[in-house]
Length: 129
Image 1 (cartoon, rainbow, N blue to C red):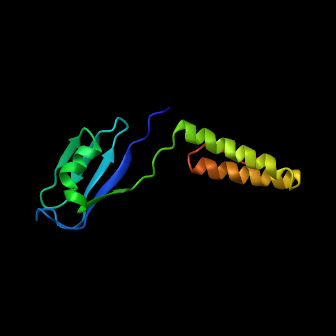
Image 2: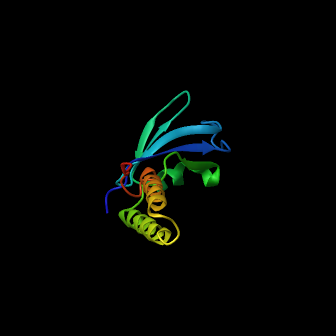
Image 3: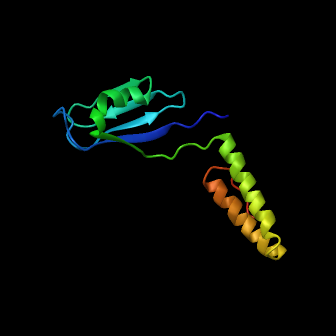
């Protein structure tokens, strides 16, 4: 399985228990492919901290649910998820052959493959001429 891509997130604080950070978007972060997380705090005294895990950071700064982690990027699909999506597209296209002319099926196939490519499940396909 390929390593996932870095994934951006931010911390949204609903209640400022410590009286330091305020409420709202208080920090921006990145979770790295190895699981470590870097958080850049906003505000009058910004700082940057790297944690061994995102769970460690949330244990300290989550304040029992007063601060919410919000992902800004979707998760990277695994190779298995990509293969399953490609198989599903292939199966659907084979089923369509029973219901549509070959030209209609090719148009639907191109649209399905391009949609799957945009979602990152399979490489994007060039339109057929």
